[in-house]
Length: 421
Image (cartoon, rainbow, N blue to C red; front, side, top):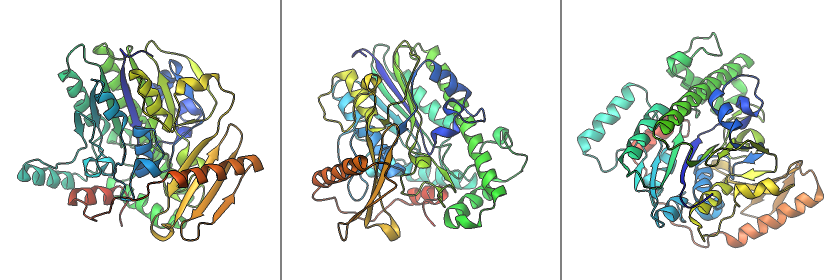
């Protein structure tokens, strides 16, 4: 990599690696990404730093563990890669539709253009009209084609010699699984309305034991259809980049913030655990000019910011390492973390992964007790214990206070996405 290259980061919400055909899935859900993987460095053991957006995306954008990247109110608490690149004269644009990483939580900092699909600062009547239209069409997020259109419009506004950092985050693979009509019955013969799909998804979260095997399969079928749709739109975006002579000369990274579960551990969606189903994510890195390599050494989404930072020789300290360094390693331990919520808010969960091993633990913040489980070796347990002790030393001493105010529009979006009851 050299400083002349632009960077394109595409992330998908709730996209688990093993539902992509390039990661061995038995359905052809990802023909575009399959082809992209053939000209990229494919990391087969890539793990998110956390299992849900509020901690996973900050880790991607900052290259720091969530306990440092965000405060107790989940607001951004450190510098992102956008700020780093912007300070070096790189144009920065972010486009997504997830309220948890919106400007309401400070994630617009460092971006020259930041479209989070919310209507803060717009004329009140315009915002109200948009909200009414969204409700009428049962819309909870901007589809991939909308994200593409907005980000391409921004690219077209740049000068020909501008270097840029572009981040698109796609929500289509996040529940409720409501694929567009042309994809709805791609993998199932069952007809289901958007509202019934939303109801089924919500019941799977609230009462997982009530989900029958037929209903579970339907959820998977709809999820896979969303993946296929998202894959097609990523393909359209790639074509648009090629038409603008931007694809081959850029560093292009494709990943996910976390995965989704389908009852494997007694839960659906992505609660705050650290099992493979919700932390094993795709990670494809295409350097300018392309590559064709598979890396089985564990990688972390923390490594993404460090990799991008190389393009401007950033001196910032990252908890991750450049992904290009992993090509020469035999093994590595990566660490994951997740805060508890609601009834287990006093818990913080940690996990570690190597090529062949894993270990999990919970720390009770009330008693400071550590409880380990499913450790494949004593040495891995000792390593995870040392990591937890280090994280405790580095955690923020004083977190920002939470004013408890969340915009009505954010509340509505979060409810539709299954975050609120």
